[in-house]
Image (cartoon, rainbow, N blue to C red; front, side):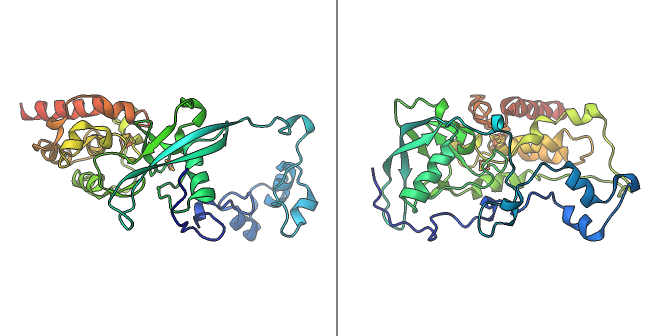
Amino acid sequence: MSTAHTPDRPEDGRDDDPQDRAPEHGHAPGHDQDDRAGYKTDADAGSVDERDEADAPAVDPAAENAEGGEPAARVELPEEQQGEQEIPTFDLTLQIRRYNPEVSDEVHWDEFKLTMYGTDRVLDALHKVKWEIDGSLSFRRSCAHGVCGSDAMRINGQNRLACKVLLKDLDLSKPVTVEPIKGLPCEKDLIVDMEPFFQSYREIMPFLVAGGNEPTMERYQSQEDRARFDDTTKCILCAACTSSCPVFWTDGQYFGPAAIVNAHRFIFDSRDDAGDLRLEILNDKEGVWRCRTTFNCTEACPRGIQVTKAIAEVKNAILSRSM
Ligand code: SF4
Ligand code: FES
């Protein structure tokens, strides 16, 4: 196991990331504002505070008032609902590709022996290494729930979101390998420079371009028209598709699947007026025609977007427009 690097983490061993901190109370946003205003909507139902008390589960007042003890929201569950069973643990070997240009231009692999829980994901294993063994390990993550798209990486040779891969679903008889996504310059460990990726994204104008007079109400759209581009609205810009594309690996100028998916989202939006312009941009020699239909992108997409199908639809739109 390699732990040679000097940890650069804060004293408590964790990133000082506000998203990791749970709120002290379980109130929904806006709730406190209503409390302050003493707002009533239904005389029979009593005040908001009264209703909350009636609806809320029993809270242990000792826990609520304890200073520096358990959080106030600790709820007494009936005995049969309390988690009596222990979560099983297992051992695994994690191999991580390391690169730190401030120390050496050489890439190497570090190996870590870990004991993890059956509910842990690859992201939890990376956190364990960073927080308990080697604070110099660098990777991106934010939401930890498959929403922000910041932790795309190659796990056992396949592009995945580290927060969506359960360790128990991997073959743990062999080391689990983790390395940065390909085709983008590695900056440190699992962090790549995303700028070329976002440059292509910006070029396809990823925003609604609607002409005519500004409406006084919403721009209406039928359900059928909305369904036309529903699939491509799900993109979270993780780059798993683009960095799994062999054309992108060899030709960094290629727009890549993610930019085309996001162009598709507006080209087929009935409210948008810049579809022709986007098709013109993607008719470039580095545009859709570079796609070799390998389906790597569709397999890599953590959102299940039919990426190759979207690219084919954009190709067809260019052809039908020019005829
Ligand atoms: S299309 Fe899928 S894989 Fe590609 S950037 Fe969007 S969410 Fe990620
Ligand atoms: S950390 Fe946000 S998608 Fe994984």
